[in-house]
Length: 274
Image (cartoon, rainbow, N blue to C red; front, side, top):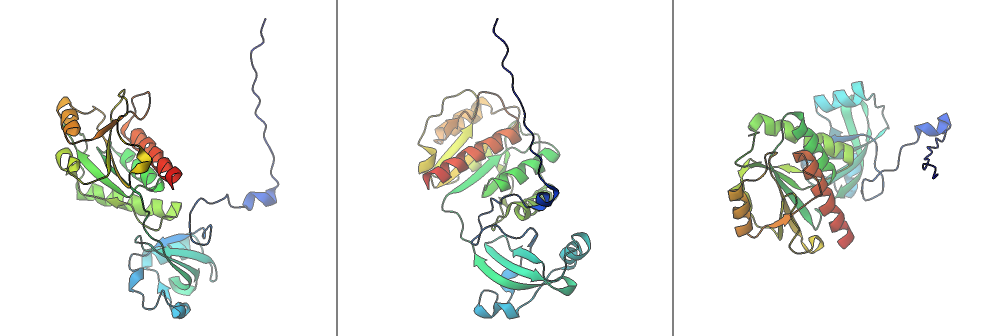
C-alpha cells in the first residue's frame, strides 16, 4: 500500500539582534534602497536652488500636518534620514531638523518609464476600490480611468475620487514611487475605446487571447468590466474598435482581482522586454 506523501514545514529562529534588520527593498531609486520614511511635498519644484550644488544651504519646511506626523507620530529626531517627493519625479533625500524642517542632501529627477500601463476599470463597491487603487499604484500603473458601463454599480463623484487620490499618495509613500499614479475623471466605455494606445486589452473570461505580443507595446490600456460582465453590445463595440480580448485566468474574478492580475502580468512582460 502506497503511503501518503508527507510535507514538513521547517521554522528557523533568528536572534533578536537580527530582527531589527530591514527587509530588502524593491524600490528602484538612483542610489539603492531609500530611507524608511517618505513625505509627499507637492511644491518641491518651487524651492529655489534645490537641484543645484548649493542645495545644501536650502531648507524644506514641512506643512503642519506632515510636521506633526514626523515629529509627534513617528518621533523622528534631528539628523534622521527622510525622503521627500513631489509625485512628478523629483526625489530629495534629506535630514530632519527641528520644527519640521528638512535639510536636503541629495536631489534626483526620476524620468517617467518608457512603457506605460493605464487601467480603465469599473470600480467595485466600498473599500475594495481603495484597496485596488493602492495595489495598482504599487504595481506601477500610470493612470486609472474609472469606467462607466451598462452594468456599473459605482459611479464615483468628486468626494470618492478625492479619497482615491489620497490612497494613491499613501501607496506611493510606501512603495517608493517617484511619480504618482493619476486618477482620471469617470469616462464612458465609448470614450475610453476611442483613446489612443498601442494596445487595448479588454478582459473577458473564457476567450482565447488574440492580438500582438504584450511586450511589443509601449502604451497599453487594460479594460476591466463590472462584476455583472460586459453586455453583448459592449463586446461588439470593443471588437469594432479593434480591442484585443484577453482571458486573464481560468476563473471568473472579482473586479479588483482581475485588475491587479492584469496589471501584474503586463508589468512583468514590460520588464522582460527591457
